[in-house]
Image 1: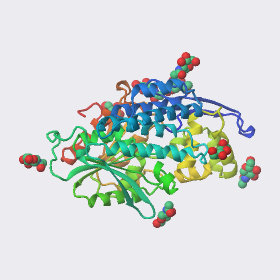
Image 2: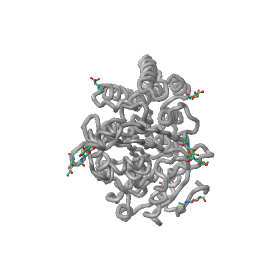
Image 3: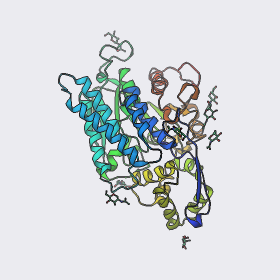
Image 4: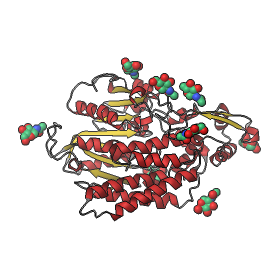
Length: 454
Ligand SMILES: *[C@@H]1O[C@H](CO)[C@@H](O)[C@H](O)[C@H]1NC(C)=O
Ligand SMILES: *[C@@H]1O[C@H](CO)[C@@H](O)[C@H](O)[C@H]1NC(C)=O
Ligand SMILES: *[C@@H]1O[C@H](CO)[C@@H](O)[C@H](O)[C@H]1NC(C)=O
Ligand SMILES: *[C@@H]1O[C@H](CO)[C@@H](O)[C@H](O)[C@H]1NC(C)=O
Ligand SMILES: *[C@@H]1O[C@H](CO)[C@@H](O)[C@H](O)[C@H]1NC(C)=O
Ligand SMILES: *[C@@H]1O[C@H](CO)[C@@H](O)[C@H](O)[C@H]1NC(C)=O
Ligand SMILES: *[C@@H]1O[C@H](CO)[C@@H](O)[C@H](O)[C@H]1NC(C)=O
Ligand SMILES: *[C@@H]1O[C@H](CO)[C@@H](O)[C@H](O)[C@H]1NC(C)=O
């Protein structure tokens, strides 16, 4: 996700939608003249770096998508997904497991991509049916890994956490790489990775999972309330007490024979850059936490990008008027896609029909001094040089965590400046996983790694 990166001037609110809007994206190389489409296309394209997409397939879809036209977005991705799915089904997976796996991984990505702009109408049955196709194809793909990954349902207080455990040996490259890893016992370091506001656990295999497995470590992903599969299958919206999600995952790890409980890392991606530190403030079995990127307060990041009229209407507490105004934006093609997307997406993930209620709840997701004081392990905080979604918040998190924190700036001139460093997955993996390794081996890590050895 990128929260609206918008400069928006609402003219006369009394007249409803007399609005003048300009938006400012910072895609590496824009694949659409709609900045939100460009960002989401880049996110999909980035999975090509780890077998989750192919560049030609995504670029072709991009060339056919009409900027701002949600139907054309869906049409192109569902076409691509169905075509690649058809190819996957036609492959004899017993004879050609690698071919089948690669096709299923890509069709799963394209099915997920097709759902991106459907949430303006949550009665749309495609929200569920297309997601089921994505899960089905992804499960076929992971069943074809050298060591199949395991789907596990972890019980939490009053919900269930769907998780996927990839054992260290399931990497395509690991069978004889133990020289690369200083850990060669049967108990392996294990990295828990969680996504954010819209990302799925499945895509994390392509963003950082393969890189974790390549280092000879276990990798586990999970989803909590508000996240794609839990939202659909259990009807639950986001909760701020994220330790209620992560602690059961850690409990699960203690029951496995192949996990080294002294070397458990937690990585949070995007809004996960808030969720992971929140969880770590009440979960002491983690030996390191990574925020990609440092995000202390999404509510105020959004507020700083809304026009003052919207903010003062919210602060006035007039829920009726506030809701009517924001709901009117969702279906208004004159509004920037960023704004239409964030409102629709937020109502979906918070399971509410009221924008006022969404923002009220969002206020509770905050990494502050108290949260930071509760964290007792090293924290790596990333920042993308051109990620303007939450300016200053990575630095703010550094200040809260002081000596516990390490900072790394990902540079625009190396193609890593985007939100979550989309497209520069190898740089993220190198920085974060080498840092994790140093932490686990007791090597002193610097306070600021920018431009350093990592
Ligand atoms: C986008 O941001 C750049 C750098 O902050 C600024 O110079 C430019 O004017 C902005 N463009 C728009 C359309 O707002
Ligand atoms: C963006 O718009 C310009 C001007 O209309 C056009 O030349 C260009 O091809 C468009 N680019 C994309 C990626 O749609
Ligand atoms: C939402 O989707 C449902 C199911 O497809 C449809 O019946 C309904 O008309 C849609 N609502 C709007 C506002 O488009
Ligand atoms: C789960 O239980 C907690 C209290 O233990 C409650 O605050 C929360 O609302 C419940 N969540 C759901 C989704 O029922
Ligand atoms: C790794 O294995 C080798 C030989 O099998 C052994 O000598 C070495 O002590 C092991 N290292 C660790 C860290 O367990
Ligand atoms: C909220 O705004 C509406 C529409 O402007 C107005 O009719 C209503 O009186 C306001 N309610 C309060 C409590 O101020
Ligand atoms: C992107 O980064 C460059 C530095 O490489 C900077 O000059 C530019 O202002 C940045 N743009 C945005 C929108 O952050
Ligand atoms: C880290 O170092 C870079 C480069 O030396 C510097 O620009 C940046 O301000 C530093 N950031 C922090 C949070 O220390």
